[in-house]
Structures are given as C-alpha cells and as structure tokens.
Image (cartoon, rainbow, N blue to C red):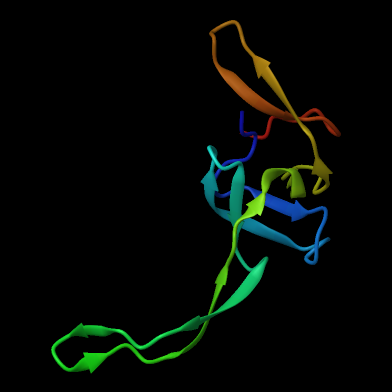
Length: 108
C-alpha cells in the first residue's frame, strides 16, 4: 500500500540527496518507487537519432529525475511542515483518509 500520492511534498531521508524536499511527479506502486521533482538528478549520454527525413536530434548529455525507492522518502505534513509517518483512518461512511502521526491533522 502506497501512502504517497502524486502532488505530495516529500523529504528524502537517505542517500546522496538526504534532506532535500520536492513534489512527487510520478508514483510507481508496483516498483515501489517515486519520481520527485528536482531530486536525484542523473545525467545520461544521448546519441543522435533520426527523427524522419534528414534532420536529427542533437547528441549530448541529458539530465532527468531518476526514481527513488519509497523507503527513502517521507511525506511532509502540510499542517506542521514536518516529515511524518502516515496513519490510515476509516470513517463510518467507509471512506479512508491519511492522518499525520505528529499533529493528528487529516492530510487529504
């Protein structure tokens, strides 16, 4: 079960980018990974490739955000602005919501 959704603010808690915060751009639940904007930037060599006709895409180095494992990020509560674990609460209507463990406020 993934407690982090697209658009959430997360903080990296381990690795080279420890302490950095960013917004979640993509969640991959089967691979248990998330892509965070501005975090875990990697460079990759790009070969020239034909795009049709005689034009080509230019060669060079491209930079992009690589996925990070879910265990290396922690959700930041929008109310108390602290990294927190998430508690799931089911209401009588059957609806579930995420709750901050630090301040007890409903996250969504």
